Length: 308
Length: 286
Image 1 (cartoon, rainbow over the protein chains, first blue to last red):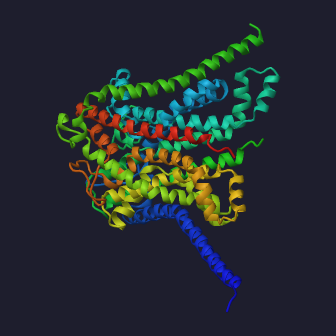
Image 2: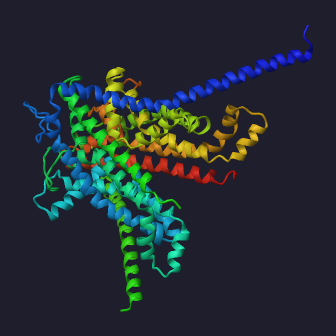
Image 3: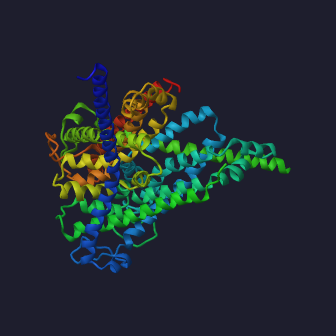
């Protein structure tokens, strides 16, 4: 016969074992959940690769990457992706021409000039701008920006790259402004005070002390914003047109990679056909381009960060 | 003019410049909202909510789109919250940064956050629609949106969990609690408002996202409300897209009407998030 004490020790041990089992299984479950994100990436790469490889079984990869004619939906299709890439880059570049001065300017204002009270009003308003879905900017481009452009350029196409660029630019302003502002806010006040003590004006402190100190994060915010512009879909689908063209003239109608993907997906595509595969080939190129930009942005921060 | 005067002048000029560009951004926001309300306000009526879309502008409404959006977002919340919070708990409470798997997971989440939404749509098309055979259904759309907003939820939940003071955790451990008891009794209750705030913002992003769902369920004409997760569907942003791409200008105003509803939903979600944040921000100070 076990004494009372021994018995209670036995149930204690059982209880401990049970608890340990529970703890172990919970940590395993959570690990599985956390790993799902890896499977998402594997899923993206695998899905894109599978159909892209199938695509290159029918279309030469050289023709795809160097061809200057994209007529995928025509009877005698040509799959030169350069016009789509050119359309995408043109929108991204003109978009950042709009967004970088405004985004950086408002970041400087919020971080260096504005009083706390003004900041508390303006920051949430800029956050609203960031929360507006891109489809709304697309509507705005088509029904507001384009008619205004038409006043200045009477010959402009209803669908044109400029209108899309401006809307994309407006969309990425909050991204540049908030990331750059965070970077400038992170510059220690001691450095500012030292510069003020030497008699600098706010302008000099901003441009010669704060911006150089935060430069790596500022540049990386530009790169991230451009990457976002490259992947932007709804604005360019609605406003920039669907005519793939190798041009630098923003007044013309173009087609971006994303807009082409939507155009195909909207139509009745047979699963497994060549057209279906083009979605994945163009999507792969898009994925690689944005991934590349995001990695560059991270490298800029890592390599050139000023530590204080 | 002395050197000092010149520098002061330059400073004033620069102040004016950066102030004006900030103002300019806000003015654009004002114009955008004004333009949409001016175009769409006239369509807001009870009929607009109870009618399906139609070839005739005056008979068209958002019934199918609104119910589709509610279905999709409801399912997305059910899928994404447990996975997102679970992942964040693992990364903050269990994982060790020296572990290679942990570092891969963290880097991977950062990368996923930068993937364009249309690429998630292509993934959904390849995997959920075709490989799993869910078709162009609500389920496919919700799963796609889940993957899209998951990185945002995970990062937000991580931030909230990080903000739990160490003293609270140690106190619970000192009383003999197991790790899970500490999480359940201390970490989660303390970080819940922060987790919810971040999740609401992520879900709002999902509610407005068009490109990903368009790839998965691009059906332009839906004149029924869904009955099950395997039904075809349309959502508000897709309806807005369809009406905006019509050649007839009247449909553009209809799109503006639907945008107003979408923006009201999004601003409502944001307001809830802000109220939650303010209400619980000063609750317990570690």
